[in-house]
Image 1 (tube, rainbow, N blue to C red):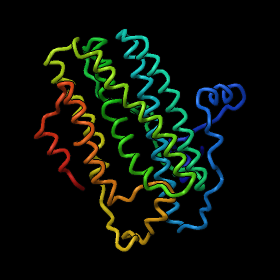
Image 2: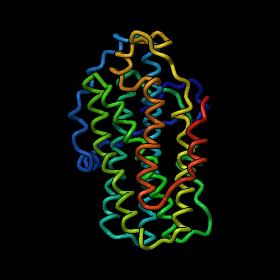
Image 3: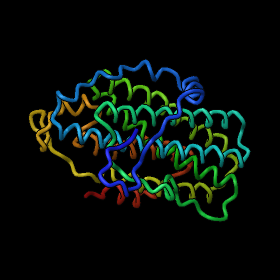
Image 4: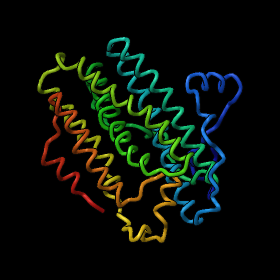
Length: 292
């Protein structure tokens, strides 16, 4: 996936493909991608500005999935060094392969729409969270699992349900279905890890992990801070038909913004609270109240 370059000096996000033996093993680990209805979106049916917006949206999804790929690799390393149960490690290892498939799926959606948008990424700071110094291996593993599985992946999976329900084109729907099927499993790693962890930590560590969760939620606030484009009679302020937005695979902001807040309050926070990991209520309310 190569973006259309606006300036060759920009460090654009790009993907390469080896083919051959590497592709063969990738297909064995992530089967079924080739069977999706590729080549069925006629971009000529939609306004060019809307297609450009969709290209950007799917490029951002591709980058987000690549970030998740890197993050799960770090989760796996941290859990291995903490010597968590082997079956939890095996579960996490499978998720790394899943994320590679998600990058491919989102990247191919970009190509279906005419190519990736020219977005830049600083790989030196890519997928880095502010993990504190001086933590034990178990604390580092807990930190990574809470950030990636309990918060980031839980948020992605729950908001993706809204996009899946709206997606009306067979291809965009199939891509969302495939990604969501994997991410619904990814969110199970966090609770399973916390089940194992619960009798190994004290209240002070639970309080620390609650701060970790709140910090991670802070990285997600652009989802509920974005400007809402009002919809009237099925048409957005930009003049785009909501039906066309759904066909190209995403949810209009009028629905996505409140959904993002709801996922935090109804899904993520209650799950963590069940393990005694409860982000400060006033700080959480202040975070969710922030708007553009």
